[in-house]
Image 1 (spheres, rainbow, N blue to C red):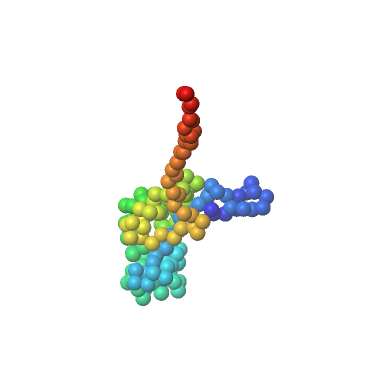
Image 2: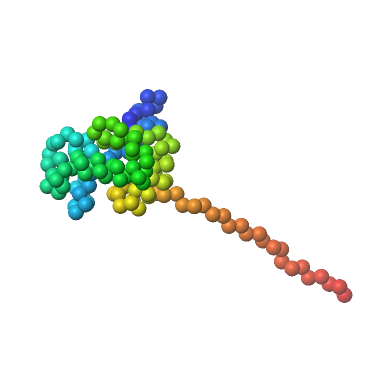
Amino acid sequence: PVGPDPADPRGHPSDDNWRLDFLLQASDEPSLMVHADDVWSEGPALSALERKTARPQEALLSGLDRAGRAYPEVRRALRGNRPAGLPLDRAGALGFLRDAAPALADAGFGVLLPTWWQRPQKLGMTLTVPTPPPVAVDIG
């Protein structure tokens, strides 16, 4: 969730406002991840990426375009200047966690999810009907 809920007196985050952040990750050094805001700001993080790729900003846009094939909502962010993330409502966040995150991972993208998220398991049910033991009948 993003930001405090104005209706919550303790200032806890609202469950209605989520944000999908974009990061650029070096393919040969997965621990090197730079937030898209830093890619656009041309600061020290961009310099670190430039040692790995010649044009990090173009690489980010190209990667987002590819991600848009697996998760079309990403294309909304590409309409803006210097895309760095995507706001999601509660339903959008749940859809991302359930469907888009696995699709992006299958397409080769690194996906970081909240530690509390585990893909929901399918529920099943088992029924047991006890039968009474046979009764002996004396027909004698």
